[in-house]
Amino acid sequence: MSDFERADMLESGSFRKFDPWLVTDRKYVRTIAQNVAGAYSSIRPRQRKLRTYDKKNVEIVTRAILANVAYAVAMGDDLPIIAVSLRASKRKLTRYDRSGFAILPKLLEVLSEGGLIELRKSDRRGVTSSYVPSDHLLADLKRFRLASEHFAWEHGIETINLSVTTRDYSTQTRSVEPIDYEDTDETRRFREEMTRLNKFLGTAKFNFLDDDGPPVLTSHRDLVRYFKLNHADDKPNFDLGGRLFNGWWQGLSSDRRSHIRIRNEPVADLDFSAAFLRLAHIEAGVIASDGDLYANVPGIDGQQYRAGLKKIINSMFFRDTPLIRIPSDAKPLLPRGITGKEIREAILSAFPAIRHVFESGIGLRLMFRESQVMVRSLSRLMDLHVPAMCMHDGLMVQRSKADIAAREMASASAEILGQSLPIKLKTLYK
Image: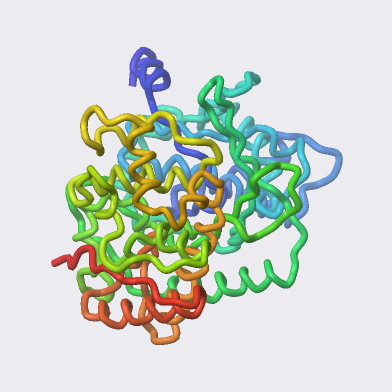
């Protein structure tokens, strides 16, 4: 690769965030890591001899550095660019950090000096530091024909995550700050639920048939619950958000889901019908009408513009000020020419019993209730030895288990909410 080509890729390439839990079984990566660990004392002279534990840690962190590059190559990146924080050794570690990775910045420098990677440091706010493989490392990795099955994730990631999102409306940016917290009976119970569920999912027979899209790594299935605080100075609490993320299937576009297999069967995709709207009715203590709630909005075809209506209605649960403008991502999904004021009034008139719930900032609370139902649904299915893939407000199960999944989802919602939410079969894949 010429210097010009490399510079052009670095300028226009997309970043992959460094993942300390990513590992690979490739002997080439393991050998490099062992060599770096063996030579570390001479590369970075120190007063005392490197302890066995420290040497092993150098090897583990080096393997993670290289595994991230190798994974990007396997996923088809022409030039992997791995975004990484160089502040790891300068701050107090939290429950979200992998133990021993405070040496990451130092090891990146060692590998850069050794010519294995190119480290791109940044001291500017908003500009991330990153590293890329050297030409010879990149050539070697491409020669080995890496595939998704060569990678996995170490267990041990914190599964109960708490954070606060700060938005800067002047620059149209946002930042997510992880919040460390002291464990309580509640957080321990939540974590035990996730440990049990992840252990079950780890042994489930999930796979993905090759298609023309990017490779899919089906070993990435340790789910994490993400809770939120409204403000950074709020006391740690776990009744906002709580959705499940991290499953490999969650990032797939809908047109690729037909290639998912559970126990060698195609999947059925089920979800709770108009979940947020129905949860809002329950929170308000009123009964939602039967049928498709989106069809109730006057002047708007609930079938044709369902996706746009869903976006607007859900955004009105999260905001605490009146909707004035239609978000740009919702405009193409709504009737041409309709204004924010018009669609707001149509929605409020369609649901007078919960008019006060809209624009009250209740969205994260509704999301928590939804997550409770989802965790209970997954647990009930696990007890029946039925593995399921969660999709926030729905589940995917093998086709032959669709009826069982619908029954257990309905029962879970009744247990959590006091009433069953209607279940819709979105797609029965072949």
